[in-house]
Length: 442
Image 1 (cartoon, one colour):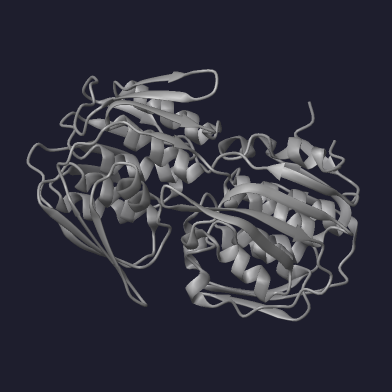
Image 2: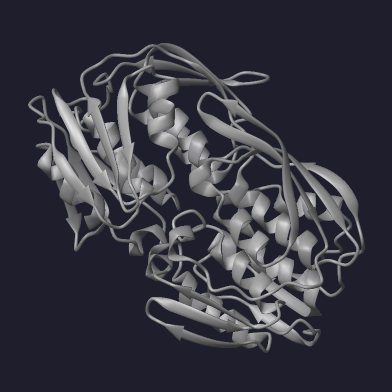
């Protein structure tokens, strides 16, 4: 069996509508919060990817009953501190940093030992960022040199905390919020802005009062713990991080047009939209609406031949942290130099995405200047590949794989792309949708 897929031809022009699978961030958060609710919760359009399925398997091991129905998933929540399992149970988070880190917080009131492990990629990632604040609650949490495995033992005697989060990490903020649900008194987080899904779901679905004050540099979040909440129904919108690959595919394709329906357009996640607009891409939104505190929209995008380089404002970094790889590909085709600073957080993802992006762009003939915390891309609007490009050894990072497919379909050449299974973690039907648009993939 061939270990790689081949793409040898450009995608033909298309004019289509797509629905993107459910948002992974919201899917994982729903599973965790529904498990800690009292009574039944239902979710529609849950993302059925490896990361989300690992979350379901894990919660079942912790004593939560989760059933797949014909049109939805149902969770029978056990309450704030109701997990039931044997001591020293092992939970495998697979590739999901979101689930592993948030679970550490969700276990705050669980007094039995839980050992969290992950795959090779996740096992290389930093967990000290969540260990430090969670210990302040009184949680006993141990790591191996700040990496997995993590052993968590919660406490009956939690205390509220004040914590200053300086990385702009939604995972750290969310782990603290999940722990705070089981702690008495008021927890306060002073945090650099990051995606806001957890606090939105707590406020609008759990109906727990949560105070949020914003200023230029930091958000202040205040929440009172030990408030039990009932089960809730939810419908997961499309994932903008997944939609991003089809947005840039359309921009770089020839004479094409695409409408992506029902996408999560949360203000903390729309960095790619703002960046591409600044680059003069033909992209706009319609049908903006609110669903339980989240903004949803339809996105219309067209082929855009006159992209311009961008000096990306740092304020957009946390809004586009998961989309930078595909943004960098758009910059490769833009006129002029694009510059990104303050992006060292990319080195803490499933792979060192800053290093891999620079390596990939160089392989397709694009000049780059890579530094520890920045990247300059010298765009070439006339790039047209004639050679063979082999993409491998990227720690099975799903976003590297998808970015490579978009490059192959829009820049020419013959691409051999390894580790197709990587997309199972976030976007299992990615190739199916590409073929629906006319892509020829072998």
